[in-house]
Amino acid sequence: MSATMTAPADKLLYKPEEAADILGIGRSMLYELMSVGTVEYVKLGRCRRIRRTALEQYVANLSPENH
Image (tube, rainbow, N blue to C red; front, side, top):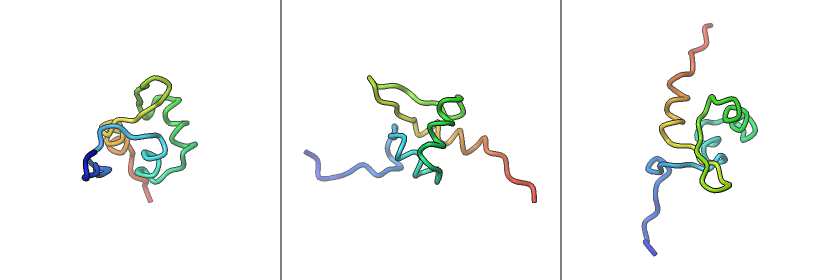
């Protein structure tokens, strides 16, 4: 077993809970975004994983609030 751990920024795929933490939103909100296709995910068997690029794309598509 390797003594080094992968830093979160170096991961290619995230669990929904990890992705929600990264985005600063709740897990249920992330699942809603996934269900409507706003955040893309892949299925590995029965597990859903979110690509790092999908998180970056979601953030890039957010519109700034007008105050």
